[in-house]
Amino acid sequence: MGKLQSKFRKRSDLYRASQGEKADNTFDSQVVQYEPAHQGSINTVTNLSPDLCVSGGSDQAVVVYDWKQGRMCQSFQGHNREVTKVVCYPGSTWIFSASRDKTVLMWDLNQGDEPIQEFCGHELVVNGVAISPDGRKLCTGSRDNWMCLWDIESAKCEHRRNISRNLVTHVCWVPGSSSVAQTSEDKMIRVWDSRSWQVTNTFPAKQYIQTHCDVSPNGNYLVSSSNGFGGQGCEATLWDLRQPGCKVVEYRGHQQTTACCVFLPALADGTVRVATSSHDSTIRIWDQNSAVCLATLPLDGAGPLVSLSPTDCSSLLCASFSCGLHQIQLGPVLNQAQGPGTGGTVGLDIKVVARF
Image (tube, rainbow, N blue to C red; front, side):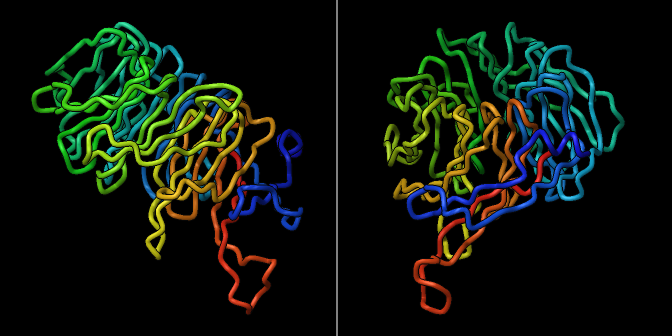
């Protein structure tokens, strides 16, 4: 354990909400190092339950991990290339994993360590996978320009459509609807109707490749992120799905590719926030509507941070290229400039509490 701990920083820097800048070394925390979930880089992480997460990486494994107890529950071996994306169906034990081996495998945590379904038909790496709200359909997207809709029970492809240069980077289902959103290397965002398997909306092309997207729980907004370098094109963008092509705000501050963007659960006071992670090894938390950066957390030595998964309004999981999975804690803090008992404003603390 000592060797593992020595590989990582034992101190988590605290970042102040008001300006997204480092505080004055007022907080030191021992980061707990648990058994690593993977060997090598981790490409994707998502939630299976309030206690369990699922991840996939370059070791070709799909891992179920109890991040609260710090222990591995299951490791699924079935892909012969690295795993690119994992998704779970809410309220179930179903897990779907996409891979560079051109397939998507379906697993059930309660049905052994073999895949219970296999979805084959893509010609290149599968980068997008999403489940319909009713749990009956699976959408996949690939660098082969194909978007496919599958029947989960039979694993039969019901609809396929190829759009030139639509090298899919991510797919997500719009909650409570028949619509599917996807990002692409052609800098476009497309919204599909799963009933007709036709594109119903395209967003104005961005300047750079769109790397990821997420839809708000109420289905009203979509956030997308883009690649870039030197601070150019490294933003995330908030779009209003109710007004086709309507850009609301942009979240700017990362210095390299913004690889992931997610909506965080709303706070009790109604505050809505967005989290982003980047190849610049930082996580940023933003006010959704004003685009103010509330907090910044650098994970020095972690390499590109490619996937985020909120567990609740105060905790976030992050997948990294070099240092495994990180449990990030978000919490309010009294503005120390005003002091306790003075009615000081509440900011946001962000820190790493565990790695695995």
